[in-house]
Amino acid sequence: MGPRFAPIPNGQGTGRALAGEVVASGRELNSNESESPLRFSKTGPLSFETVALIHSEVPMSRLLIPALLALALPTDTPLATEYKTGTTYTVTVESEFAMETTSSSAERDGEPVEANFGGDLSSELSREVVIKDHILAVENGKPTHIRREFATLKGRSLMTFGENERDSDLDCPLQGVTLELTKADGEVQTEVVEGSAPDDDALLVGHELSLALDALYPAEEVSAGEAWEISGENLLRAMGFNQEATLFPAPAQEEGGEREGGRGGRGGRGGRGMRGAESAARYFAAATWELEGVLEEGTEERDGAQYYVVLIKGEGSGELPEREGRGRDREQRLWTPSGASSPAIENSFSIDMEAKLFLSVAGRHPSRFEVEANLTTSSTRERQRGESSMITRSERAGTLEHTVDIERTEVEKEDK
Image 1 (tube, rainbow, N blue to C red):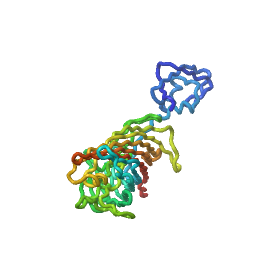
Image 2 (image 1 turned 90 degrees about the vertical axis):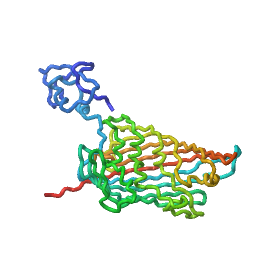
Image 3 (image 1 turned 30 degrees about the vertical axis):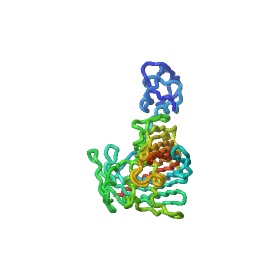
Image 4 (image 1 turned 135 degrees about the vertical axis):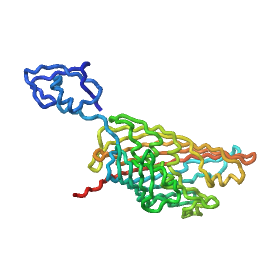
């Protein structure tokens, strides 16, 4: 992006308008008009009014009109969603997360143990979400009353360990439910207006009225090439991971620690005792993030429309907390007898991610969010049984493909 200029009374750099030259007003100078200096500095863009009046204050330099008018165009791009009453946003989220063990080893009392502790472990987790937000009221540019329809909530978990397989369709209590959300005095009130209210009232808490992708916007207007920091909290909201437990709550456990809802054992000996597939949301929430967004130059055409593009890159790392409950890991159940001491766990991970956010120039709203992420984990466990100890080590790798599409429609006004 070129420098931004504004006229100043004193400074360096002068230009002179010559007789017969056309100035910003479109008027040609005559030979009786004197030439005088025009000074510029890199303080900001010229306004159209300033350009139009330059000829009457100080004659312009020998610049072409297109170049001068280009300086009058705004160089800052307002990245913000323009909410209007009567607008509907249809948000479609598709997510695929796959993990597999890349290496594993074990040793007892310093001697290698020939055992497959998680070497054949793999998992896949998929999500499909369609939510329709109908904007009913807007104040100061923000929605204050919306109707949110959970049109589609689908999830599938596939866990494989050797010949064992557990394939589960995830329970989604808000499927087919419509909520009305009203914000007043900073508080969000939630009412179920269609469908069956969930048994757990906690699923009605934590809903926000604005689009989740709004969380990726910079706090101030930016120019092309400028970067801004994005917090881990805002990344979680943009991806919908902050609502993971609301949209896809963990299934209840049966007696004995088994979870309901699975179809274990397809093609093997059954999946009893196997937990569900890993969720990317757990890693993203536990990570410490270094993340920034950069507004790219110009616009990009997609399907005949123009979009601003924000490139988002970053990395996160941390220690993943141990899952609560029974059946945490197969190797723990195989080796650790009842009453043995709890394992000391090291469970580090790192994430590299790259994403693109597309914002509709005409519609003034986020249109598409594309995320690709690679994840690696390293786990070390040590267990004691009397004077004997066992150490197991494993490394895993995963990939995440996550997209959000937003379609904006407006209610057609009836002719009166």
